[in-house]
Image (cartoon, rainbow, N blue to C red; front, side, top):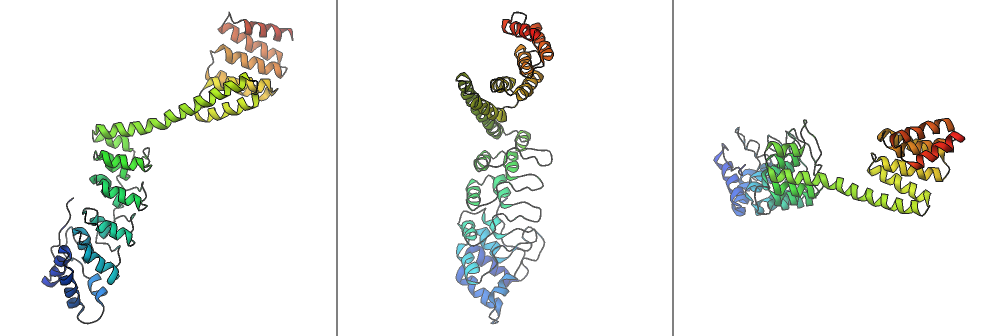
Length: 338
């Protein structure tokens, strides 16, 4: 979207005011404001009420909109600091001067932000400044808005800024948003940013979004493996309470690992807690019903609970699965004796 120019103002004098704002001609702009004020001593009211009336893209535009759009920094300063014009004036579509300042690199955007402009202000359709910057690939403006505290995940009808950037194939914008912890799993109208990138056939954005989704999973796997390794060391040292805690933490990261339940069941057995040992053994057996060790853990827990008949049944199940496992065979013999 190209920066709009000042047009369609009916009164030639008013058109001259907007042209002076567009050209950053501060002396002429001040003189014209005085003409509009007609000696009433209320220049703020005179210029703040001056708006583009004719229908079109500029309807409702103020002098500050024009100055911000064209990068007219001197006129912006005069309006904001001298006349105390509301920095968040909106046009007919609810757009502020800051939005149009984002299309120009003359410093007006940063100036308006430094003087109280709302970086999260959305237009009448719910589209924020961050949406515009992301979809247009304006990385400099994205960085500025985020540095000023803009919320990274505002939701518009078509999604978040990350949806917009991905859908337009704006790799740089996608990377910046992800670096600022944008929600890459956010679903709006059944669409995630990754799906938006796929619809746009943006290979680079797809790769980036897939990679960032895989990283947390990889980190969880690494952390879980470290906890398991430490748990195994503690188990060998017969420090069963510590081992059980480490296995429990690993389960939070990887709750579908049957071996973890088997090993923690063994810890409970050594600590004399048959009830907990059986609970973990049952979960292990449910996950891996054809694993002989799961049957063995059930039998051992039942032995501790003095349910010898139940223990015999579990050991027998394990022996059927692995007829050459002498440990299960010995355990079965002991259970039957008991």
